[in-house]
Image (cartoon, rainbow, N blue to C red; front, side):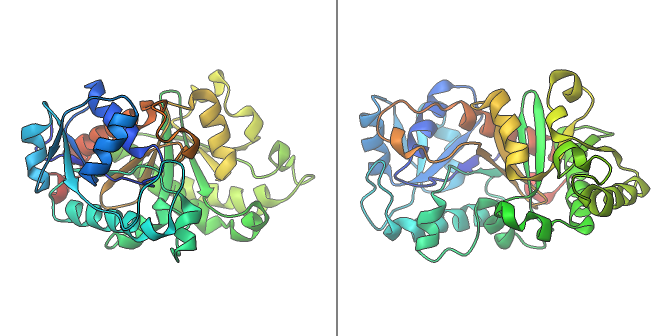
Length: 338
């Protein structure tokens, strides 16, 4: 196990982040982590959820290991306004963003092994002037010397990567390029080798159009954009196949034949993933110089404060972060993991 803990961010303070974090600690399934949050708020949410759990305020990340077996370590981080379950406040947006800044600073100082982010309420942040589509893009902005951030979603039965992430459907054909596909696939292949110990990753790529364009009769992007990207990737030695019709890529026999599916846009990737395993899926940002994972669900405002939130995805996010840190330590010998 590592000698550095993971940091868990609060995410949207009116969502379910605190509750699932409390339940993740209670599960006893994970290694050491600490929560960056307001201790009094955590106590209130624990009581509301019927979770009578010991909490321990810490002064620095290194103290988490000492107390983790007996209590959930909390490093104090405060919000500007009251955090009412189910009712996000724009006034708290800066504190939500600041928690991400602090967490990246911790990992860059080598004080933590990686970051696990609880879900944020994107429109609330945007109302406060936040200029980034989501976690993925903002963390890439904070990272030093980072290539393009790539969203890799992982479940026990499927890994998927969307080339276009948080953009409207109407913009996809303008944004999708051969160069972008090549960049995303190279970052993905490298991550599978270093973060998942897959020595020769098998990549399948989906077409953009129905029936993968059917030879150009239902769209030409497969011919003009995707196939040229595949040719370049094969020259790099990447084991890639396709483009395949997306509707035939996700049954069991197909999934056995690849290690990751590259999809052209967000929902093409996430619909099959969440259909197969909604609660077990995890989001991780690859292409960063540090480890970041997150539960693959939103803030669930309607469940906040009810005690009904399911912690499975967060637990899996913590476990995946630990696994990636372990493999990076072995394969990259990155100074952050020494």
